[in-house]
Length: 436
Ligand code: TRP
Image 1 (cartoon, rainbow, N blue to C red):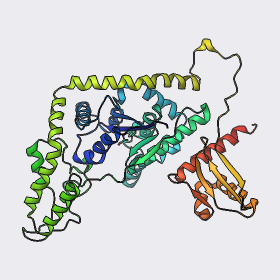
Image 2 (cartoon, rainbow, N blue to C red):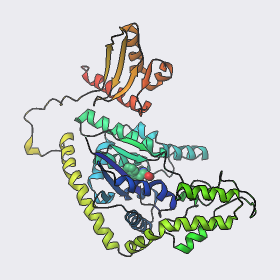
Image 3 (cartoon, rainbow, N blue to C red):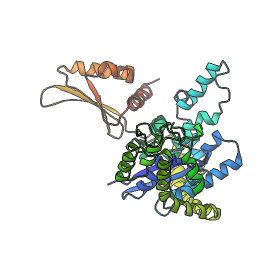
Image 4 (cartoon, rainbow, N blue to C red):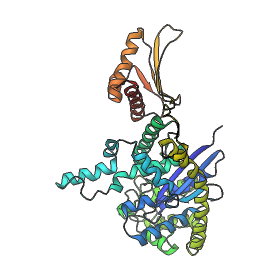
């Protein structure tokens, strides 16, 4: 059985809040304890530079996030926990990848497009205030992932496009230079709770509605007391539907505790009393972690040592891999000059497989270079018809799919973009094979 490699980056641009704890830190720490997985957790401080130009804030956030993850139980002996900027191979790989990725792919990245749309709506230059760093964000993220050949990248829905781009970069690089990279999968975290913030919208730094994870006890109490509620008086029954306070409670409480608070809502508990219940419940979980957090914050040298040890483990993988990649692209020792230009190694290619079943009907399927099934056709009576559908897919890509709903089925977890990427590899291969 292969060891699944999981990899997650945390941008060091803020102070961890309860939403980060429930949505990311708590489930990730739990996942890191599973057998048969190797986990990589890193502080994405190069990514932070894209958003933040306050050096003190970057430093502070890096310390806070490292201390938070460690305080919440991330075990640096068990996982590889490092700081992105301690791995010089990552920016080097970013350059390699930027040379195989089409610029048009980045033009379509959500964050970049949003910035351009905003500028266009405001009537300014479309690229006003857009740094090259923002534009390149997905390439740096691709390098983070491909550097360690991660299989699974736990992300929210908003990051899925970045993983698809990383797959795209892996496929184009492999196509040119041989099979060096694993195509990563997004492990979408749909069942972890998104926590509402003080105002009832999603808890997020950008809404300024967060509760810091390690706020001192008194401040935690004050913040919970400020969560919005309706104006129902004590004694009036209250609804748990749409109650931010209730949802926050649920993310910490057991099923029994949740039912008890639901009953109390029906029985007309006063908001002030409900808030006290929620505060005590959260503090019960957080107080012990808060103590370790404080100890870590007071000992930055210890965190530095942990991160350096993590970087050494990460570089034990990254340095030899980067040597291999440099050789692959032709950045080579000149003394080892090959006598004659070697023919490019034969690279496995994606494949349309046409076949006939015992039922006498004709079928086809599309596999990627590693043999993974991307799509499967329905039965055709006439092989010409099957060939014609293949032709339509080759020419139009995913645009053909709406037309073909009854005739082809995508495998579970395969997106239209995956199919497009593979079809593009096939087209490129064909174009190369043709004598010029
Ligand atoms: N873009 C991610 C975020 O904002 C952070 C990140 C950087 C990341 N590199 C990564 C996440 C690699 C997963 C894998 O949340």
